[in-house]
Length: 61
Image (cartoon, rainbow, N blue to C red; front, side, top):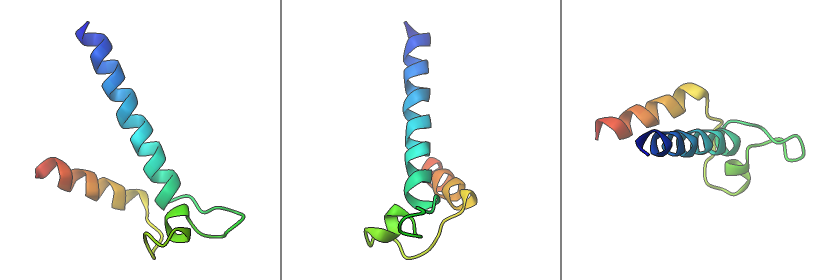
């Protein structure tokens, strides 16, 4: 049962990473900006390294 729980947990993390990349890294061809920029949530284009830094800061806290 514990192996199944770990698989679900990893799936949740993968989905969260994909969603964050989509919202702050990937530029939409229709709008020529990220969804986060279009919504007014962030004014800059993120890189993968920025997401890694956020993740490391969260783990350290």
